[in-house]
Structure formats: structure tokens, C-alpha cells
Length: 254
Ligand SMILES: NC(=O)c1ccc[n+]([C@@H]2O[C@H](COP(=O)([O-])OP(=O)(O)OC[C@H]3O[C@@H](n4cnc5c(N)ncnc54)[C@H](OP(=O)(O)O)[C@@H]3O)[C@@H](O)[C@H]2O)c1
Picture 1 (tube, rainbow, N blue to C red):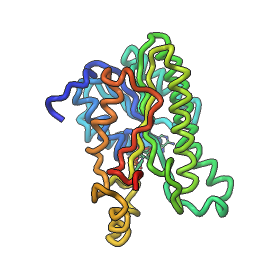
Picture 2 (picture 1 turned 90 degrees about the horizontal axis):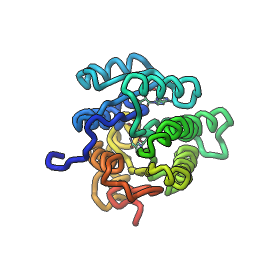
Picture 3 (picture 1 turned 90 degrees about the vertical axis):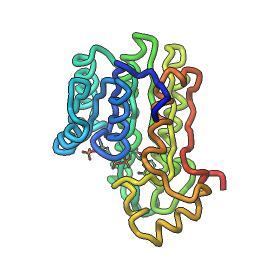
Picture 4 (picture 1 turned 180 degrees about the horizontal axis):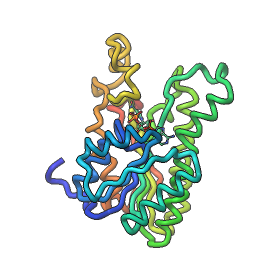
């Protein structure tokens, strides 16, 4: 990514679910761009490992928080503001429980858990972030959705419904926050090589079947997403809002 300046120096960025996978790499690249980064996750051990991987330092803060718990979310953002003096960017990256029974065979507890993790958490974090960002009349929110929010996929029904909700949240917040010069966008990747999607890429037969439906001829690597998220979080995206950008190697067009 050398040669492109995203002008993120000293920006304060909260990356939810920053302890591994896509969130961890986003945190790494925001730090490399000079930003001050706050990561959160539920498990302290994962956060400690992430801090070690990222090399620690004064521009990194790791706070345990479950994004669907109001108290945790309040503490996450209040601590970020207290420590770094403000907030500029929120990346709603948390997502969980990809594979489940069909919607008709799922019980309410499963439904609630998946909606909480993939949608309610983004609502709570966005609401809190917006209340801070509105004051300074500038800010960015980037949501990590999924191709499953556009295409109905067997076994991913509730997850896809939650991600479709996240994409509508993106549009609604974009309208509500435009008067405050806050842009809200999302990316929707297809399968990305992380632990979360291991069931899809670790078995050669399943991997090959997925790749057949991707014009680019491969699944995504995290590196395919990072520059797009940094772009949407930067001042280069001041005139883009309410959009979900499919980062899927063309899988959605065939
Ligand atoms: N990987 C893919 O193929 C793919 C494709 C399309 C979209 N996405 C989306 O990309 C995002 C990141 O995925 P990933 O593959 O990087 O996932 P991942 O490797 O499973 O990482 C998820 C992160 O979120 C944290 N987390 C989970 N639930 C949380 C909660 N309720 N509150 C706070 N933190 C929580 C996890 O830490 P703890 O477990 O310690 O809480 C971890 O840091 C998700 O929104 C996912 O839906 C992924």
C-alpha cells in the first residue's frame, strides 16, 4: 500500500473485534498510517495477544467489550475519548456465528445471538459514536457486512438477515448523519481467509466449489479489504455515503 496517503495521522479509530482476523489487520494498518487505535473484543486473552502482535505502543489501546452490551459500549467509547481526546472513525467489524440450521429450524436463542452479534452491536456502537462525532461535525463509520447480506445462502440465513439489516443501518445512518458531515458506508466481502470462514476454505472440495462461483478465481485475502476500508475511513471518501461496496471478486454479478 505504499504510495497512497490516506491522511489518517493522529485520527482516533475504534475497531470492534480487533483482536484477530480482519479487525486485527485493520488495526495494524491504521497504526501504520499514524492513527491512534482502540480495539475491543470479548476475551481479554485474545486482546492481550493482539496487543503483543501489534507491538503495543502509546497509540494502541485494547478494551474488553461485548458490543451488544450497552454498558460495555459506553465504557469502550468513554475510555477511548478520555485516553485519546476524541473520536474520528468507527469500524463496526464484529461479526459471528456464520453457519446455523435453516431459519425455519432455528430456535429463538440462536436468532437473538446472531442478530445481537452482527446487528445490535453495530447499532449500539454507531449510536454512541454518532453522539460523539456529531459534536465536531466530522467523522466516518465503516461497517463490515458480507455478500451473505445480498445473496441468500443455505446455512447462513440468520447471518445474512443480520448483515442485510446492517446494510440498511448503513443507509439510515448515512441520511441521519449527513447534516453533521459524518459519512457511513459498508463493505461486503465474499469468503475471506480467516479463522471465522475456515469451514469454507479448509476443505478442498468446498473451497473449489466456492471458487467456481467467483469470477476472480479465488477467495479473498484480508489484504484485499484493508485498502478499501482505509479509503472509506479517510477524507478521500467525503462524498460517498450510504453505500455498501461488494468486495467479492465479482461473485455477486454472476
Ligand atoms: N471471514 C470471512 O469470510 C468474512 C466474509 C464476509 C464478511 N466477514 C465479516 O468480517 C468481519 C470480521 O470477520 P473475521 O473473519 O475477521 O472474524 P473473526 O476472525 O472471527 O474475528 C472476530 C472478532 O470479533 C470479536 N468478537 C466477536 N463477537 C464479539 C462481540 N459480541 N463483542 C466484541 N467482540 C466480538 C472476536 O474477539 P472475541 O472472540 O475475543 O470476542 C474477534 O476479535 C465480521 O463482521 C464478518 O461477518 C467475514
